[in-house]
Length: 460
Ligand code: GLU
Ligand code: MG
Image 1: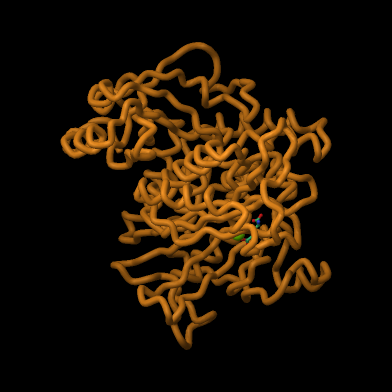
Image 2: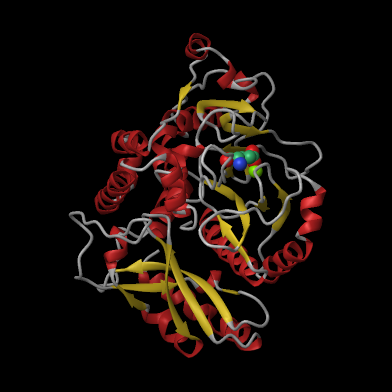
């Protein structure tokens, strides 16, 4: 969205925004965006400056496009160094008061150059443009991230689970019930549509599922929900990690992305009896496209060196390139429509993604692939039944299944080789993203898995 359009939208929303922040005695607003390292960077302003910021933006250096997960800085042809200035323009339609008493609000921003042109490295612009390519084909999308995290007792840099109850166990909810109810009420206050929260498999692990929504909002919500979980945890004296792996060799934290597509409001992933795989031609093409681009998408959605310690077989992380109907070891889980839920339509879950990634890059990459493959009539292989990791290599080859990249280096190479993703990203964005990832790979090269885990555990 161009600067002037977003400013005009902010102008129209101003009266409403003003009444909301005044009614909640908000004192300060956090303006935030996600960088190439998957870290949310921020500027904060007093409420009195919000009107001005919503018209002219807030200044910030472009150097963060060259930041790594440990705050060291690399450089590329288009980013790094002390020069330059950007304007962070908030999108007031996504402003949320964080709770009734703290005085804080949160708003996502888009980044613009001083001449009001979109900053070519802004992830939210990338996701918007990718969505526009789909909208141009009269197709809409709904998306949702599943957010997994572990809670730890706050004591230094080690991870010590804050609860001892069993996986998926009611006991774990009992142990942390005040914490969880505070989390529910914070998210409810922010109008985040929570579907459910449950204890997950790994020690101290939980998951929240959010209702599917507009793709850009799904990425905004991902950052807001992570921020909220961290805030509520801190109040309870707990520490939180969304890192892909918290204990080397253990089950990790996923950030699975669910998405559905609609043409003229009708679901594209729907049952079509009599058709191959009982799917529409467009639905089949998108699944085939996702499978073909999945190694490259991993660079955008599983984008830390630590991601590949999580992306291993038998961990429900989707380490094999295949799709399966309600199969939690397939990288693409086709979540069937259920007769109990009347809205209808199935969705596709991308399991390899995790929360070390910029959600806007993950969302934009998936939208770009969907838009690029919708009409090419490709047919995916048969859906896989059971755990592909239990098959032998020959069986997997015969079924057209292979391993997804086992290093960030490999997925980055796939990204650079992907003509669809390369053409959907600006040259500046791709160049800077690759530079940051190459620098992170170099940083992790001499580290053992345990060292990678402890270097990233409290960064995401
Ligand atoms: N924790 C698993 C992961 O790393 C996912 C478990 C699940 O299927 O929700 O992705
Ligand atoms: Mg889960």
